[in-house]
Amino acid sequence: MQSPDIPVVQAGYYRTALRPRILHLGFGAFARAHPLLYTDLALEETQADWGVVAARLNTGADQLSALDQAGGWYTVVTTSDQGASARRVGCITQTLHPGRDGSDAIPDLMASPALGIVTLTITEKGYCLAGDRLDLTLPGIRHDLENPQAPKTAIGTIVEGLHRRRSAEHGGLTILSCDNLPANGHACRKAVLALARMRDAALAEWIADTCTFPCSMVDRIVPAMTDEGQALLTRILGHPDPNGILCEPFRQWVIEDDFAAGRPDWHLAGAEFVDDVAPFEEMKLRMLNGAHSCLAYLGALARHETVADCMQDPVFRAAARHLMLNEQAPTLRMPDHIDLTAYADRLIERFSNSHLHHRTIQIAADGSQKLPQRLLAPIADHLRDGSPWPISALAVAGWMRFLRGQTEDGSALTVQDPLADTLAQCANLPDGDAYVDALLDIEQVFPADLVVTPGFQATLHSAYQALSILGARDALSQAMQLEGPNP
Ligand code: CS2
Image (cartoon, rainbow, N blue to C red; front, side):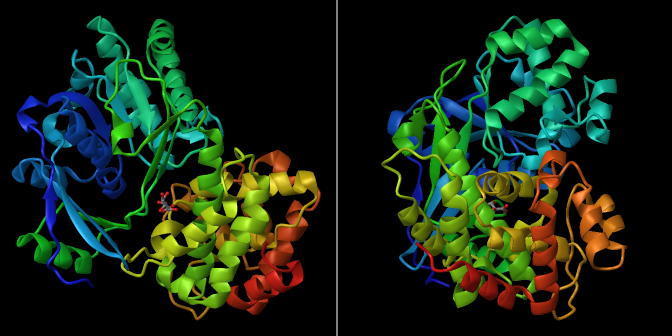
């Protein structure tokens, strides 16, 4: 840990000028260190009035109350071998939680004339999609269909807010997803329109005509806060900050410039506005998040506690780079000026940041929601092109072994996933081919056309076997030897 004499920078703008123009749903660690921080930095440059109302829908009402007590201030500390820096973020003007403030509070805010943008960090599962359809079997969605005025899901909340906004005869809003989903804006639009349509076709039409759902690629490694991190924050600030957060210095935000009611000058804080986010999003989802998931499952099985621990292990480090450059990069269609080797090397350096305690088990959560875009989509490209994908196969097999709830030396692993019940049923089967087949039958994870593509099942079965016999480290080593060197 660094020495505590780290200067604390505070936003230099008039907070009294801020109005509630952005609603942020999902005030978690990532939001604090990414979209909210960009807004804070942009405000400093422009002295504009884009205040943020921070909201959570489920847990975390206490954290929001703690934020109120701190006058809306919280601290972001960036940390790496190059040193640390701390910034107090001041763009939040109010907090809302339906459990604390009533179920009208957020939809009413969405109907207020000043509001222009709803930003979202609600994680993959927050979009309530199964494939590209709204998942009508989810209890939250069923609840929201029956009780549209008191919604529980983020999608239901957005639909109810937009319903009230339309009734109030204000214009449309921008709904800006900041989650790691492919074409996150389109996914969000699909979910919102599907729910709205089931309620009122005219509402759905109004949303389609007046609201925008830009796609964005977001990137910053922000591990869950640890006690050690809290202690460092307390030393830096001289008092605890229950909403303070530690993250890496790197940050990136690439956004489609399609806003219905204005936006902050986020480019002054380093955001890039482009016409098409897709290539950047795919690059990040496959190379960064794909490698993260691979390290999460195989690393957890081999008892590597953090991503940085994985990077200390030469086999895991080489395997991550191999996955990025040999198996993920060839599936991307990037503009010429993007150097994917440099991107991969930067990722390895970021993963190696030992000041962050980014636990493999944290990244391992919600695998059923992450595997499709991070690993299975590129695998489908390999099957189409006839190119090899041994590390990707081990990563997916690693997820399967991880779900059995034990590390290679027999310690317990906790599985967190919205499909946990289904996955646990599969894990009750005896280990081996029948277990792998049962998982491959879960269509929410493995698209039917992928499962029947020649080579898919056989490659996964042998990867699973290699993992069971050799363990993660040796299986990775063997796979790399068979495939040849990195570019
Ligand atoms: C991680 C991401 O937990 C995970 O699934 O892969 O949160 C990752 O740290 C961020 O996307 C980095 O931008």
